[in-house]
Picture 1 (cartoon, rainbow, N blue to C red):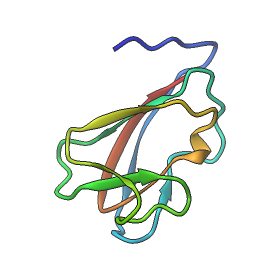
Picture 2: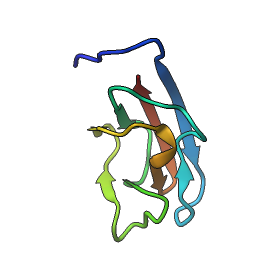
Picture 3: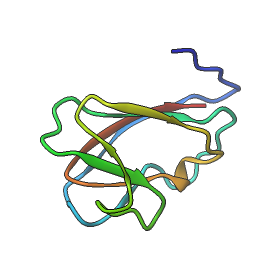
Picture 4: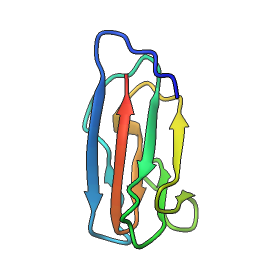
Length: 91
């Protein structure tokens, strides 16, 4: 994987303990090149990625260990639902 970064690189792990309440990845971190998210391999459930209205019915499913890259300009636009954790890196 190649990540092009400007002056900032963001990375963190975010955990959601609710299977129905969406959690935002970050409150406000601007991105130039998007972000890669990874469902932590220890997750026992599939998590679902989307916008603030994400549910298990309309989100993009990520099983434990699966990842995806999103071309977004701010981490605040990404939410996930499902009990588990997401690791992200973006710039």
